[in-house]
Every structure is written in C-alpha cells, then in structure tokens.
Amino acid sequence: MKYLILVTDGAGDEPMEALGGKTPLEAANLNNINSLAARGTVGMVNTIPEGMAPGSDAANLSVMGYDPKIYHSGRSPLEAVSMGVELSPTDVAFRCNLVTLKGEGDYEDLTIVDHSAGDITTEEAAELLKAINEAFSTDKIHFYTGFSYRHAMVIQDGSTGYEFMPPHDVLDQRVGDHLPRGAGSEFIKDMMKKSYKLLSQHPANQARVEKGLNPANSIWIWGQGRKPNLTPMYDKYKVKGVTVSAVDLIKGIGLCAGLKAVAVEGATGTIDTNYEGKVAAAIQSFEEGYDLVFLHLEGPDECSHQGDLAGKIRSLELIDEKIVGPLVEYFNRSGEDYRFLVLPDHQTPIRIRTHLGEPVPFVMYDSTDQKEEDPSRTFAETSGKKGLNFDNGYELTDFFFKKK
Picture 1 (cartoon, one colour):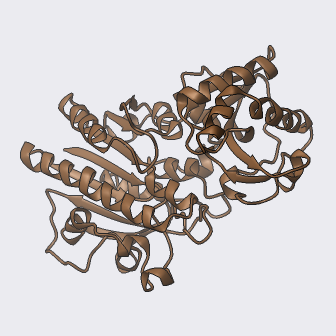
Picture 2 (cartoon, rainbow, N blue to C red):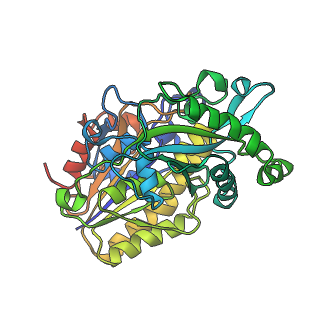
C-alpha cells in the first residue's frame, strides 16, 4: 500500500459574493480531485486546536498525525532544522522574514506592505543575510539563509518569552503597532529598526527598486521556539516516507518526524512552481520503496495573502491538473494499492488575507475500498459538511493510516 497526503495550503475559504456565493474550492474546476471524492470519502477536519494561533506549524503538525497541544513549540525551530541548523535543547530559533516597508518618517510610522518582499529570490536574499550577519551576529546570535523571504535567527540559551506578530497578519498596517513585546525584546526591535537603513541602502535592493520590484528593506522577527521531540512516523504508522515541499517549515516537521526531505529544482512555494518536478519526485520516491509522500503546495496560500482571488482559483486548478491527474495515472498504471488524502492545512480567506482556525474540507480515496460513485461528493466546504467530521487533525491521519 502506498500513501499520498496532498496539502493544498490555505485552500479553505468562505462563500464569496464575487463567486455567486461559492467558495474558491467550489468555483474551481477540479475534475481529478472530485473524481476521487465521488468514489471516496469527504468530510471536514479541524486542524487547529481551540485557543491556538492558526499557523501552518500547528496545522501541518496536526496533518502529519501529531497533537499540536503536545508537540507544538513554534515554527522557527522546524524551519531551522530544514536549513541544516543543529539546535541544542536550549537554543531558541526565530523566523526572520525579509519584508517590504513603505512610507515616510520614523521606522514605527512605516507600513508593512509585503511579507514576502516581492517573493525575493534566494540568491538575492543570501546577499542581504550576509550583510545582516555582518551587522548583528555575536557569539550567541546568528542568522541562517533559508528560501526566498523565509530565513532563521538562532539565539543560544535564548528566551521564548516574547510576543511577536507574523507579518502576513498585519499587512497594510503601521509597523509601530506590531513590534516585539515582552521583557528583553528591546534588542530585537533595535535590530529590526537598524536593518531598515542597512537594507534600504544595499545594492541588491537598489537593483530591485530600479526593476520596479519590492525591496526587502527590513527584517521581521517572529515565531520563536525550541526544537520539538516528535515520535517518528515510522514508529506511529509503520511507513517510511518523504516530504516534497518548497517550504522550510514542512521539511523541518518532516525531518523531526523521520521523513526525508526531497529537493525539487524550481519549486518556489508560489503558484509558479515546478509542478512536473514535484510529481516526478513523488513518483521516484515511491519507486525507491518509500511508502508515504507528503506533498505540499503553497500556491493557494500565497495567493490568499496577496488577496488574489483569480490566482487562488488558478492555483487550485493547476494542482488538480498538474499534480493530482498525473499521480492518479501513475498509481493506476503501476497497479499498486494506494490511499490518497487531499486537504488544506487551514483556511486563508481572501477577505482577510490571513489564516483562520476554522475546519477545512478533505477528500480521502482508497483504491481497495471504492465507494459507489456519487458526483455530489466533492472537494469543497459545502460537500464536506455533509460527510465525516474530525475534531482533531491527527485523528484524521490515524484514520487515513487505519490506525483507528
């Protein structure tokens, strides 16, 4: 039996007037996923425990089969692990975004306009991180280059007692209303302020401005935590698996769970990713004897954060056409029994351009247990509400692997 978990990041949404009362999932043309749904199981799942922030860290821990209330310790240590950073039990890792700020006056009076600095390239970002390290690194503080706008800061023997705001939650808002808080946070605020002057003058950003691109003119620190101690997925479910994702967070959760991180050239974490490369990586992993592929697509989430409704729908249709269709063809051609789970990790409604902790729809298909075909079963919120309901994401994962 082969297992494929496909995460359509941020695909969950709300009914929209612009779509005649439909959600983006209901408006999108998803023939391949809906074919699986018609012959499989649909439902709704709550991936975010009550009282927890609806972050991708908690959500994807849940989807991988871990209770975030027990295992969640912040997203940044997971991302740092994926970058090859060796974290001791007392190290504290932080997410370091490269963001775009605009406006006049003091740093506090600027506006956060882009949490991804125009999806800056990793090559450009590496130049900027080098300058940041030269300016701010000490024997206890160091910055690590990740992917695109997503990077890490690690403090030896650091504190987790700070309050931060994710930049994607405060777009188009005043910087000074969302700076770090808590005892001892002044030095982090000071680095952020000084980074604005440093990065604004950097040649890499001056070149971006000349091209009409958003400059990565400030660092934004958030998401602190220590490395979690996850029970390996092989011990939980007796499967050997891999992750296929452009996002460091997903790779990091997988590595902590004993899954190999498979790199795909041209995988960007946006709608313009290498779909064919991701499919090839998944198929190669199955051919090499792996039982599980955890395949993650970030495109719908990024489009939601940008408020791009047409892009979100297009990203869903591309996933259906370029990911699900070819993988179903592969499974049918190989003759291998398989189970296929498709779901968002969380909602990212276009209306608010950030995450919500509401339940999301899922589709589960088992080639050995096909249901009588029912076209009313689809990968969508309205259909899901008529199916099974899981109060916790890890319970759905247990069900998927037939643990319960």
